Image (cartoon, rainbow, N blue to C red; front, side, top):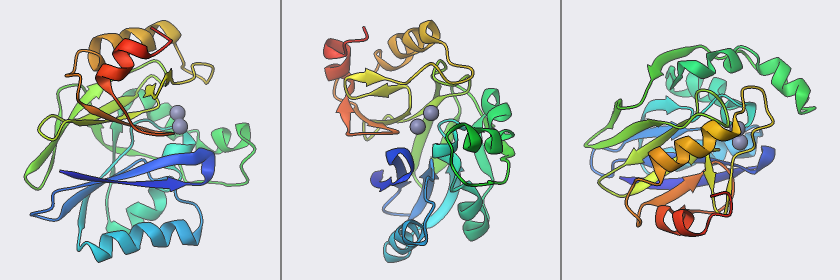
Length: 212
Ligand SMILES: [Zn+2]
Ligand SMILES: [Zn+2]
């Protein structure tokens, strides 16, 4: 499958669109758009490439990763796919907004499809495998395209870094363990697309990430 990256301004969040170029089905992952301009960028990309959104997926339910859920839900008639361990975060979006001093009152998020390790999300002829990577948040997941060798890591693994663990539900030991056991066991040449910052590769991080 193909992957397109959008950098949106709130916390410099990476929003991804993963699409099957044949069937044109796509998944929108971690929608972080807030301005009209950012919304248009996504809508225009989907229109220009003739894509059909079939999934809205959150790697976790911190506000920067799901502030655009309401817009995508209404625009494309999609429910929210996420891990149930983050359900409580989705119901506390206003609290999260206050915590970060963001002047928004977002609608709470109700998970309609509960994802867990081993689940396979179909996008046309392509597949994303769900891998639970708790620690940054309890319900953090990564989405793995085994065939095309890339993984969307959310806020678990970054280039040369890992996710912060000082937010509610954060657990340093759990995060290290999950990355070691569930991500570093993937092939070296799997490209990693994180929730913030530039891309990296599994082998590069396994050998050089200073947190391990
Ligand atoms: Zn986060
Ligand atoms: Zn984030």
